[in-house]
Length: 407
Ligand SMILES: *Cc1c(COP(=O)(O)O)cnc(C)c1O
Image (cartoon, rainbow, N blue to C red; front, side):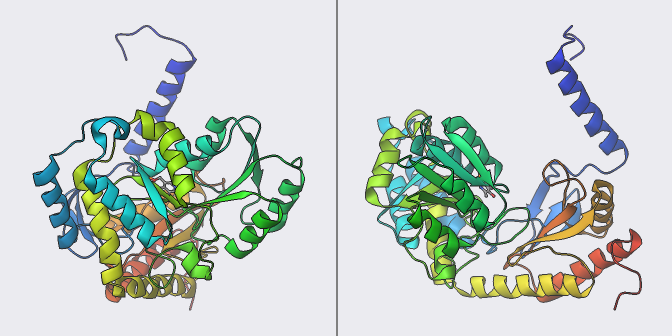
């Protein structure tokens, strides 16, 4: 920066950020972008030369590194190379893309599916293709940033409702003039809190008020439902969500995003969504990995049982130790710390003891609700979870978020 002579608002913003980063680094409280150098099997990873138990992974079913998935990716490279020929609509559509989309549709029990290169891009492009200036989009206040950005980008009238509050949603729906097109969007499982959207009531309201329903399943695929099919399977409401969006970067150990739904919707997105038309397709290896992963989920249902067991163990164990885990019912487990500083201290203690957890602080969550956002996966063994909880307990006592003689 020194060589430039800028001294404007942009420059000051950049400087303010670099000062914040530097202060955190000097205080040894900088947990941004720590590099994992190796997978060590199970839920263990190598970070800065130390083997740690991974409690911040979204690989909920422990599929990262699965031999069948790795083999599928390698075979796709041998067959197709590492890239595509550009955008899907020109030469970029490969048979592996078609196979993946068919597999997703099958898994999600829909007529069709379409993929994009990330979950983030999927939300941007899908929301902004579905609604525009004359329309309304209604979004839960805790929805993921990519949904919020999609709503803003769409130009539609953007109404937010209180988190998971169906009365608030209904009040909003009543404010919309008759005959207007409306889209309701929510996460299935909320990424900071781990709680589950009240789908039955939401579906009822969408029917009553003639609104489209889009659900982001980033944290529900592989996690909810007997076979890991997600939120509809969890509630026994198959076919109730119009636009089933998901990512290929969490439970599915690849990268990309998708929408599953009826054939007309999917064809519409292929012809009208800008991220599909103007951006390149998924690389073959990643498409093949994702395709194989959906099959592995169906072939190895024990992973879903184990994840559920591990999540119950983790949540109940933390509660017994006196922690507030908020409303989570899933594998995302917030451990409420309060002040940002406290969350940093607990993280520091845990990481020094080889438990890899991360803090979430403002502005990602409201001031005073800073937390660890810990996750468990099917790759953890119960003893590893007990060990991690014991470490977190010691940390919690030393900073005073749980009392030292809690029983
Ligand atoms: C991670 C996430 C996304 C973005 O997915 P990427 O594939 O990482 O771009 C979208 N929505 C939710 C709820 C997420 O947690």
